[in-house]
Image 1 (cartoon, rainbow, N blue to C red):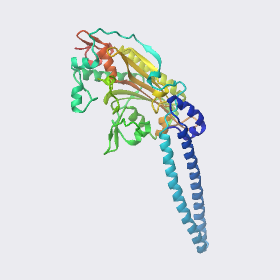
Image 2 (image 1 turned 180 degrees about the vertical axis):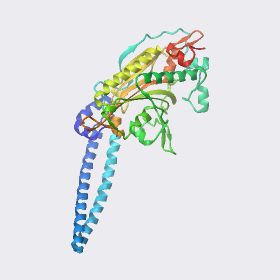
Image 3 (image 1 turned 135 degrees about the vertical axis):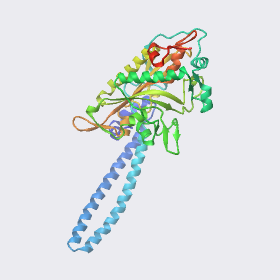
Image 4 (image 1 turned 120 degrees about the vertical axis):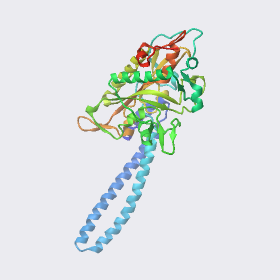
Length: 423
């Protein structure tokens, strides 16, 4: 959430920056400033009346003590009027605060200067490419056929139990999932991330804290009876560990990692591009989350990008890194790099990770602050990245490593899986 003082100080700059998102921020910014001015005036008027009320109370006490009850009663009548005015101003103040909050919730994060202009993913910038694009033989199969052939993932059985987008992993398919999860967690721990095990359900405050709420697209699963939400990513509960927390400068960096299942409605997703593991309603993901000093958050972002890069290199998957354009940038992000692996059987790139810097956008919602060396309270910066999301990694591993008589696993996974080949 943008800070109202930042909006006041940088209104024209923000309007220009938001054009990268193809977003006309001017009306909302003007409304926010208008409401903030009203909030300030109402607060000042209320404070003035409270001060007057306090002064009258003292005078009334003195009058009673000096034996002048009639004069005291006159002043008491005036305090009754003041109380009514204060009540009205307090109600107005709460209403204005709520309206201002709702406006601020509608404003996305300000894109970083590195974010390119663009309408959608076709305008994203490729900034790094690794590995050769594989050419499979004519008998090569896409991962959904390989999964059926070797009986490792059952999409029909998942559909029977729950519905489309909830696959069942079987035998070596289930072990491959576990192997990847443990491998990713170990790599993250080696890089200094502390493993956390967090709830898979969140409350409303947590959803607002990291920007998933208000959920304009209806992509979250809601348990209405308890007003809880299934998490779309471990980023949400892990980052909310620090909601309403005051840190000190020496606490940085804070680096956490967590494995969780993730739940997304993916409403409106249809077609061949979402077949198999390409897009699911439930999937496994290992996440890395960092809290950083504002002066160092972009250096931290580059470290996170390098970390994910090395994992994909060890897995032997061809991949590329793209810098998201404004039209494809997430609501809460200031700068995002997506990692895409190449699916040889589908002949297309599949996103497997997003690594983002949110600057102080989430921290402002979370009231996540720190005291700097001068004792001044400041907002921290938050970052997160997929390290990694499993479904499309598995899809690429199956398709790219198929050989006659089976599917060979990358060497780095042999000890984790307990086998080197699916057959």
